[in-house]
Image (cartoon, rainbow, N blue to C red; front, side, top):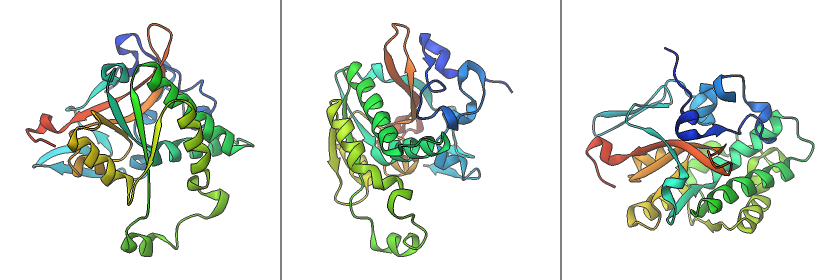
Length: 239
């Protein structure tokens, strides 16, 4: 059935279609945003993905179940949030490529600057965690398939970190994969929520995740981020 655009709730309307970085990667839809655009890219490519925690379905076909709700990051004012930097990196890079950007590095840097500034403008302290050294077994399987050089999102990590730091974010490199570091920080209470496009954080026990947070304009005309929030306690579980 036809759904209401969740970004229209609470006086928030999407800026995503007008944003120069992702403009070329989004199709049409109501409110300037298609329902497809509200779901992480990685999940689109795995439509049959499902995730169960404690016997309850959290994700089905790559979409959060009704236990999630749409939240403006203004709800986290005065707190710190963790950010899966790889999620932003992939989104910025592939959006710029789809838009035919001549200078992909500049577009990736602009994405990180805009998103980090939106969090800072809502009095939310952003802690961006970048991937460190991956597990040897994973590298052995994926190494032959991984893109190299400027054809990889990871070629622009330095530019992304510099832009985010200049916008007020704290940038951290994990010893291993960022997912594990973010889950640990969330479980300790160092961050109140993790912004990610990856359901791995739920399986790792992060108490609260904000999925697919996108740039939007709030009712006061200021930029913000809006995403789909999921909490483990909705399943009767704790982080």
